[in-house]
Amino acid sequence: MIKIRQVTEADHTNISVLVVTVFRQPSESKLITALRDGGHVAVEMVAEDEGGLVGHICLSRLAAPEGWLALAPLSVRTEAQGRGIGAELVRYAADRARQARFKAVVVVGDPDYYHRFGFVFRGPAKLQSPYPPQYTGLYPIAAETAAAQAQLVYPEAFATV
Image 1 (tube, helix red, strand yellow):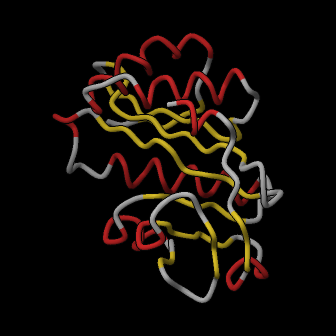
Image 2 (tube, one colour):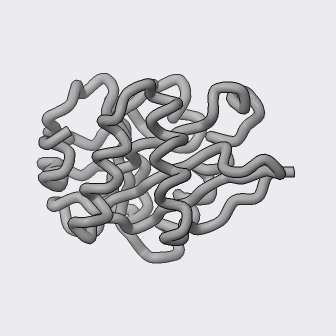
């Protein structure tokens, strides 16, 4: 049975191990630490089973536009992939963002994967991003964000990893 919950400080080391293992290098783990240290994390959740942590998701505040979040990274242990854990983490995190009245969530990722959660790639919104536009998706929470024209400014932590 999988349990999804908010991260506690006691989870940080296990999250680092999980993320480094999944990505096979430390950049994403360093990003998470830098986002936490900078006070940018808005939503951070883990998935766990009887054996411990099997998944993690982080949503951080963009520097601009105000009230927008970036989903990065999403990690699921390799042996647990394909069981819907990543999907549940995305759904729970998006729901938390809605409840907290954030305006939108952006992701840089596989359009085929994120489209099923409501992320729109190459839609009516005109987003300027430092990342490839074909992989930049928008999950509009506030109605006006669906067709927004916005320059996405990520926290400095994204540039340092």
